[in-house]
Amino acid sequence: MNSVTKKWLFMKISSAILVPLMIWFIVNLISIFDKDYTEVVNFLTTQPSKILVSLTLVFAYFFSALSISEVFEDYIQDEKIKNAANKALNIFAIIMPLITIIVIFNLN
Image 1 (cartoon, rainbow, N blue to C red):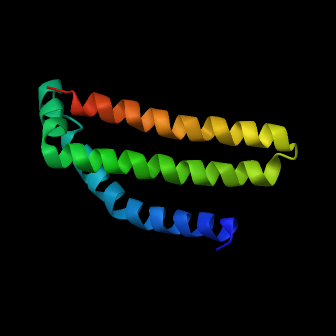
Image 2 (image 1 turned 90 degrees about the vertical axis):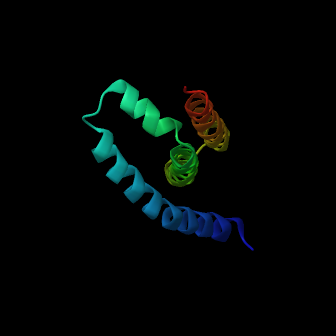
Image 3 (image 1 turned 135 degrees about the horizontal axis):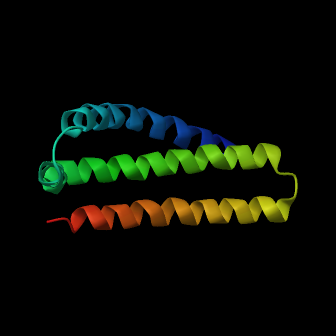
């Protein structure tokens, strides 16, 4: 399979997975919006919330990295700059959700 086809397929699959996760996240964000700190932490420390927030973050960063890399492919002409930008983007897309997930799983 062509790499462009794989990227397109990964974008479609990740966006399809993101739709129900984002609906769940928005509904719960609305429900905890006016709560105090302890209730928000209690929400984030329950096992289903930890897992679903983690999945939402992973798929959101994955989808955004794929989307932004497409912009790099279209608008950056220099191959060295394009490769450096894609590598920096991929590192960012791995490190940021990882740090956030570690923080969420260490909440007490």
